[in-house]
Structure formats: structure tokens, C-alpha cells
Length: 118
Image: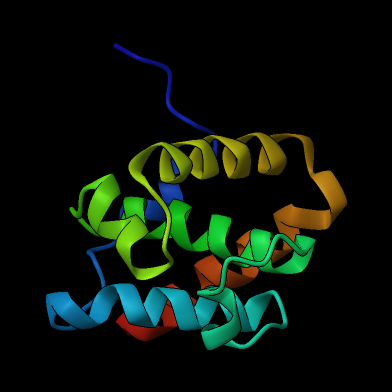
């Protein structure tokens, strides 16, 4: 049996109760809001750190909360599949090491997604 990520229990709840085509948009809006950026700006190609964090959180949560492929997740924010995979790994590592209080944003987003389910 493989080792589970210490925060994987947060994803035991059912996937967002929204139509499939809206899920990625909802996740993007929530992640952008948590990172204090506009969702439309998060879709840009800018490499400003706060925008990159918002896109990386979006990729991480989109992968955990939907069954979309890396390509489908990246299409919304103009990323290829390799960038989405990298973003997922980066957020996991940042949460593990609590880089720049990323764990706090992570917990905020988990609570927001849980509240949407109730």
C-alpha cells in the first residue's frame, strides 16, 4: 500500500456538486480569490508570484476534486499538461514545508470547498 499524503483526508468528501463544465471555473475563482487576484488575471501568462500561486493552487485542487486530465485542467489557464503536473507537485511540496504560509491558503481553500458541499 502506498503512503498517503498527510492532507489527503481533506479530499474524502464527494466532488463539488456542480455541473462538470462549471467545476473548473469554480475552482479557479476560489483559488484566485484566496490568493487575492482576479480570476481573469489568473488566466494570463504573467509570471508574477501571486498569479503563479493562484494557477498552481487551481491545478492542484482541480486535479484532486475532478476527474479531468492534466490537459483539460491546463486548457483553462493556458498551461500544458507538464506545467499542470509540475504545479501539483510544487503545491504539495509547499504545503509540506509551509513555504510562505501556503498551508494557511490551502486550509482556507479546503474549508471553502467543504462549505460548498454543505
